[in-house]
Image 1: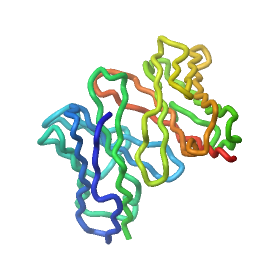
Image 2 (image 1 turned 60 degrees about the vertical axis):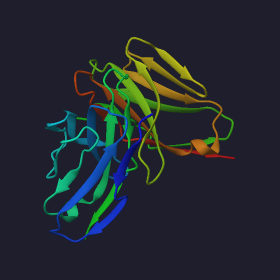
Image 3 (image 1 turned 90 degrees about the vertical axis):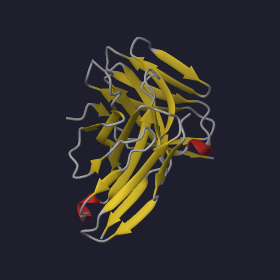
Amino acid sequence: EADIYQTPRYLVIGTGKKITLECSQTMGHDKMYWYQQDPGMELHLIHYSYGVNSTEKGDLSSESTVSRIRTEHFPLTLESARPSHTSQYLCASSEFGAGRVQYFGPGTRLTVT
Amino acid sequence: DQQVKQNSPSLSVQEGRISILNCDYTNSMFDYFLWYKKYPAEGPTFLISISSIKDKNEDGRFTVFLNKSAKHLSLHIVPSQPGDSAVYFCAASIGGNTDKLIFGTGTRLQVFP
């Protein structure tokens, strides 16, 4: 099972601030993902990465950006936070050929005031 | 258009009895189906999966059944325990290089004594 970490766990921030949500995994997985989830709703994929220097936008349009310069690290950045960005952000990773199983971090609950 | 649907937002079951959680899908190209369990303020935890070439997979108290002709799968938990109380998400993968998952909206299971 993957060990995957997210910081911060909770963040309350004012409109217009720049934020970076951190995600790291220690299992050497090539594939990493960011999901957004609102209460009572499904998880929506907003970004994914096949490996270093590879990033793609997911199915749900997002104003956030991501980078992947190290295998273990996949941070998500919002240049100017808005109240509409309030949500839970979940990071996940997977290993090729492992039956599609993705392992999730604990999530970051973001509130923009 | 939601490709993975969990039509029951909640389910209440007595401890020791069977819990049955249902999921319907529309895309016949899905090749793997997964069930995740999520506690509040935590990330989803992988429970069990099934390949589209199978119709049943069992792991301890958890069994997943797949009915391809009906595009329906179900998760059976027996016997149910209070610690099983959580939100359960059904997810499906279309495969390819990304292993992207499409999630349902979840079913909240409550197991009472």
